[in-house]
Length: 562
Image (cartoon, rainbow, N blue to C red; front, side, top):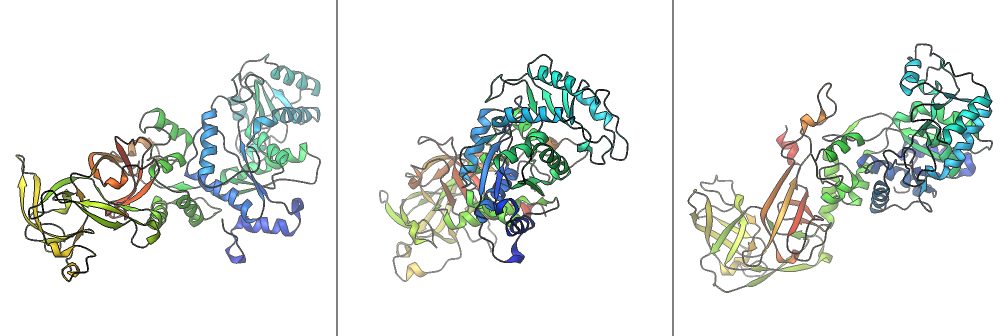
């Protein structure tokens, strides 16, 4: 996030931070944090939060922590911790010091829970979580107090120690804060702050069988880390009074973390719920968390999205106070903009048909020097072999072509990119009536860049090609949007999986690419001329090259769905 100087260009969070610094709040420090729960892979919505939190720290010369909210051992795994750290680094950010974990503070959180008990502000409840929820009623109704609400401090302390020591089963007892059962804010109606979970934790093992709830652990972890601005998504706005209540009742310094909420990212043609993304993975609807159709950061990376394109997207959508849905075409626009400037050009034939140049010498091989990028000379060029037998895209030939078809048809001329002007003379067909060979002749004087008068002759069409004897075999995976509906999980009584796009993946196994791509590595990206932007998949090997389509050259989806 770039330095912002103009007052009018500050978003509301930047303005709050600027005012806090000016007023000397928390000694004018700026310290943010990104606190994911390690129960899944990060998605594009998390990427927005990463860019915001780390960007604010950079802009205001502050710090940003990475803290794993690991308070639910039944759903958390080290695999997710590792993937989150990889994603943040890939996006171009570094956290302050070592990663933090809420589990680092389990001892202190336990002591604070004991303090609440001894202050008469927390009690052990024997009721089930379901009954407790029912007793809270609605914001316009009076809540029903638990029959255990007025237990003595001594009894609550004894029961809480016994909870900690493993004397009770899961769900048998909980610890609740004693606040206000008639509050219009349902989160203030004696919230649960500790529950029993006999599950092994990925870091603390079996040391604990009681774990703090998010609302209790979140603000106190912020306090322990010296966080000044706790940036949360909008659904936590109603949690803010509880966040502040815990801080006020458990700390005795002037320093206070400040929670600020912003609208979460909702993206069209996908789902953002971790639960639903996990369903797609476990149901084998996608190949994994990093399937290139997934909105996860690892999926976007595998598909060919760049860190710069995602940061550009986060900057363009900005920071809002109200929920809205961002069209996925904006994300696609950002990666096109980025790759247009930095992707080397290459030639690939996805649906090959053979061309034979009848008047070209049988064993002749010419090396055509073709630039990697017409507008960036620093990328250099490569030598592409030109021979008697070539491949072109099947769609670049048409029988009985209309007047405005500027590619190959019998009797018509077209320039082969970086090479010669060829004229289509005739075609051969197989037993099924499909074109098998296109016969052409070439004009030797028309070689591109030769400087001859003939080379300057203009024809209306230019197509790409590959030498049949030098091209490399490749598999190309054409990815499209995973869902056919812009809001797949926005339909009442209709399962979001009903809107899965059956054409979200097409695998082409008979493709050809130019020999310059022989030594590509996973995540290398290219613009396949006239085809779109592609990158090398992790499945690719020297023996079998595999490319993923990141995005087409233009937004063809918008045209198809008008």
